[in-house]
Length: 393
Image (tube, rainbow, N blue to C red; front, side):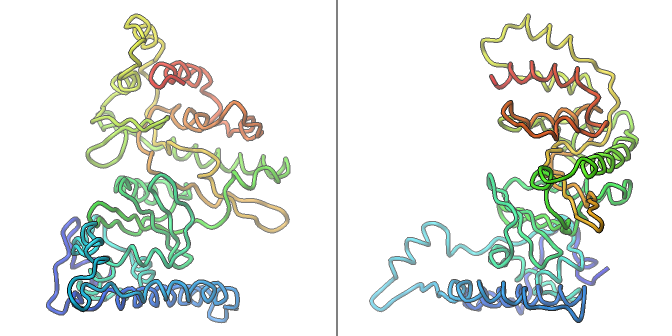
């Protein structure tokens, strides 16, 4: 373990050093971060293969470096001759010149995450604080893999990705760590650290190589589809076989142990300790015109004795990553996006896998679901009734 991660207490704020870089002009800081990002990409490629052909990488870097350098080099003047710069006054009203918040390490950064930030394993706390305060600028130099609803996924150096946004939950890091220890057959990203910076949070993870099942499925042969479904079924069987201890809260593995039910919007609960309480949560806050008698009948349709299993919670084709191999073989290289995961009734993954299907979706993926996702037709049908009373769909 690096000196940095052993010196920093989990969840404690980083301390400011006397050698802090606070007086360095902001455009110089941005230039430094940009150069470190480029260096990290090259270093990562050479780490895998010292004799690698860097033509494509350098071409990609050179194509975007000039514009990013110009952006990074723009000074932010505070004054001009005769008084304050009106642009500075406008930016200051929007908080542009407010001192950046102090980074808070929720989970320590792994060596690979430090390398992606251009830091060494034995860097000082002041260097780490400086790098983390510039994290948003660093991500601008990375490859954006996903950006939707205020959540962005950025690849820094080909090996490390950062999930950033206001609602990024440290519980996902905890779940990934649990999987790594208790279910290694489930190919999930390796958690590499979690940082809170003001209202923004940053989850560092390893990148799962490949393309989504959503994009690859239409061009796959029947044999390839059968192989992928078989692999997924084995992985989900291992996941769902993990033991739940009665009395353990359902939902996320770490406090405050919330259950999440994502539909048109995401509903969350407080601590829940049984399926009976979970079913009550599912029927909470029905639409105003729904009668109490109907809700009582609907509640009677829900059983309270399913096994509680570890679940992904969002098994749609865009979260399943495939990798082409030799002889036209295809392997499941991993399953990503575990933010909805935790302890849930055994049917939950099947239900949520089917929740994303529209009536106009003609893909045969839905007819080829792994057996682990295709055995809860009754629960899925009842949930359609729940969907109607809580969201009006």
